[in-house]
Image (cartoon, rainbow, N blue to C red; front, side, top):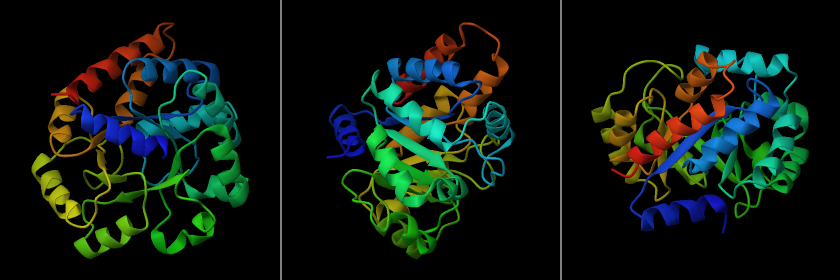
Length: 265
């Protein structure tokens, strides 16, 4: 059984929801990025989304765009990200999902990506700009038991499309809470609840909700409806605002603990 499945089963037994944390790998540099990730793992993160920096993102807001630019300036690539995973594995057994656009994977080599990611200790991938109709080339030889493809659903996705996307997904589903890009303001919990009801009717997969979640109160509200809460821009904003502080990993760890506590309410 994959670590993702095991994690959600364990959380369910303990009446908890998953805290899914995104960081751009290599921001502000690889060494500090690893220290930040270790602090997140030590303070309650349940699933790590390890972002591959990309020069032309379409779904990411300004905060994550700038984090990618900083990592790219340090020549962080998909290869760098995969090489970071065994170091993370020495510290923790939490699930690791590689979060990427398709272009870096295509450039790296599709078959090579799957083999190297699994060998490194990754548990799955979320490819932002890869709809089900276009993904066979990437996933044709993936055994689902050891490497999951996490699918995104938009808040405007109709029920029949939800069913189609969910049928080709594994691990968990990522429900985007709102239209727009990551880090944008505003969170309509009533709309999330409506979308969750529809989604629950077409799949038994765990559902995690992200976009626009930045406070512990947001986390608690969303956790009351979903199986997990995804936070990315809030972590990257904290990194950006304190990028020169020597205790930055500790600060991110403290924020992680606050978010995790909110998943238990």
